Image 1 (tube, helix red, strand yellow):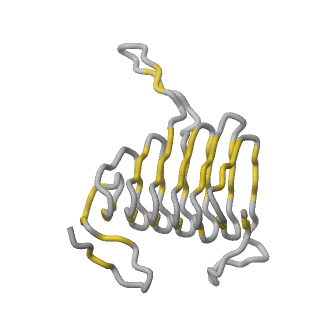
Image 2 (cartoon, rainbow, N blue to C red; image 1 turned 135 degrees about the vertical axis):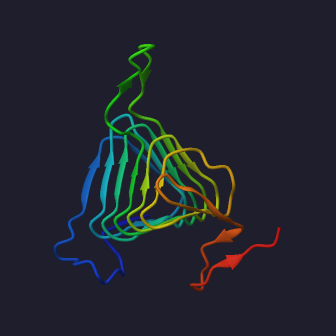
Length: 174
């Protein structure tokens, strides 16, 4: 089941927080998922967006998929975050003539937490259980699960942490 436009984020005005859907490609659901009010979701004709069961985003986040994007089971996206598998423009190396592709892939593992106003760019892999801190930019393949990533660009700040279900940070025994 896909729910769009529902959220309990009280600081966003449900009357004026407009949801925009542009779906020409494929959306694969592994179970119930929820996009909050004001979500902007674009899946281009060559795009495949796969969402794990229990995926959710709060309010006014943007998702642009023209190639391949996966967000895992139980992953949560904070308000005003942006996830894109394209930067819309190819870039060419002036010395070699090599063309860098505009589109790539985004993979966000299971039980990740993407903080408010964060940006996840093409060719990014975020392993299971990771937290991307608010206002951070993820732009590469990260390797360590259960890690706090923060900054622009995001770097590993703390290991063995996950989003707690009771509001506190938990440390995991190795």
